[in-house]
Length: 284
Ligand code: PAF
Image 1 (cartoon, rainbow, N blue to C red):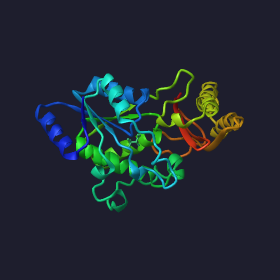
Image 2 (image 1 turned 90 degrees about the vertical axis):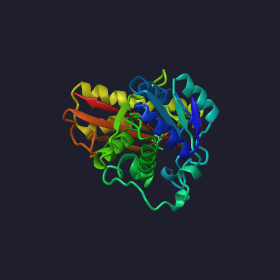
Image 3 (image 1 turned 135 degrees about the vertical axis):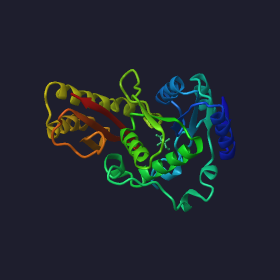
Image 4 (image 1 turned 180 degrees about the vertical axis):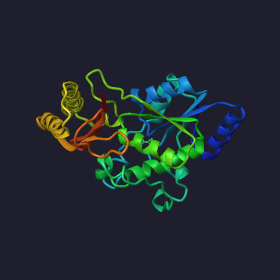
């Protein structure tokens, strides 16, 4: 497995691979890899000749009071895990390499409207602009045939899929299911911030989503009632602080009053300073 930190070296290697007729898959990550990321790498490996994973904690997608400075980073550990999963290339640039003019001085952005000011975007203004911009830069550098994203970041997947359509990017966006711990907690690099008590309390995310799915399976379609059931369950957990509970359309993210046959149920909940997200897509 190669580890590349310079843009020019990456470009040269990609050029060579394309000349050889190889298909290329991209797995964009911010590192501190867990089983969720590794499932993206394995899926990409099953479909493409060569797989590149980017490891880059992107300052452009963090708000001023967010965890950019303390976000967990461990390239050595990531390299070992990625190599074991069969990855071919890690692209791990510095902030200066990705933003040679300084990320604070950027004047060109990829900005999607409507779907980015809801759910996570409502509490994190500018977040999806940062994501869409860095993902576009990575797409331009790696020229992948397909890029792989985890369903855990449901809104991010919707944003990237829409960006690719709107901007005619010739890249297949593949969504890979959420990977959960044995007790149901969705895997996240941010889980390391949780105290043992918060880690236990955080199980309520998956439990409340499962409760909503069970109600739906039993015929409940009223989103106010479904939200109330979720809110009651999470509200009973003293360490949990609800940021949002959304039941919405799976492509526009518009709130639904009643579920016809498909909906995204998404949550963001804080445990202390740690903000966790989780979701399910229910289909009847
Ligand atoms: O999902 C993430 O880890 C990030 O948002 C991404 C897609 C790597 C962009 O920085």
